[in-house]
Length: 373
Ligand SMILES: [Zn+2]
Image (cartoon, rainbow, N blue to C red; front, side, top):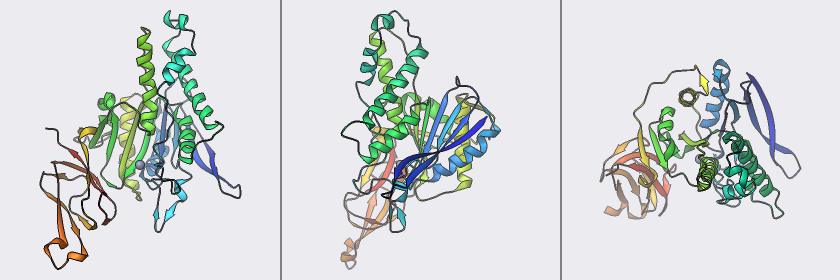
């Protein structure tokens, strides 16, 4: 086991001072072992994952490692300085409004372009091994990302950040992107083909997402490999390798709990044990887990402006018709309209609610994993 650390420069201030992110490499001693990439705080106010990486860096040297690790505990050097009042405004680029987790590189024809760069006769004759295809496609992906960063017209700040991080993540067989919600219970986004794997994280709620690209790192990590498998099938070639990628939401933003971070780390180690990436490590107490398809993960938008009391908390089970919040409207305190009850449109589990008591029409009040019926 060897641990090395680098400060990777991604930004500089207007005086030219370089601003970097720490990147930890933990080497198991064999290049043939798979690589695990874990980053935290691309939404800069979502810091619990950084504490989890701290716990991982303390734990991994005590385990038998069958994988190499790239760990990036504070991966957004732009967002981490964007303060608004007492809060980190870390979810969106403060200048453009761009979501820091929606601009990763993906091109829907990348697998086709890659295959057309190979010798087709040799490909069809089976002369490229699966390992060959894997390393050549990885290289092709990385070169495509570098090409985009260097394009004459440039890229926006969120793209620049995402592409640079993706160049690290593209080396990995496993990608784990650590986030939190606003006021949130723990949950994980897993592609539908990895649900059985995702159970090993031991997180109570799993949102099952379709394996397609909508801008985030997890999707940008597994989708090209699914495309490659599908395209190779057209040539009669079976190619089953997939990058396994997840977005893990570790509670609420603007919050660190090191005790909880130990448990979060134990869940990740449990997942890695199930994949034979590590041996040993802390045990877990298995939790009951609910899997909800993305189509049943519903947002309740506020119909009212006002000051809200959240009666249902993140993690609560609610019933259809149950009052989950109350909104005060000070212009109507002398009538029945001064206090409006908000009820749950369906039964399910409250995953998160808006962090502020001040809401307007259209604010995302709650996100609820509703029961299937
Ligand atoms: Zn996030």
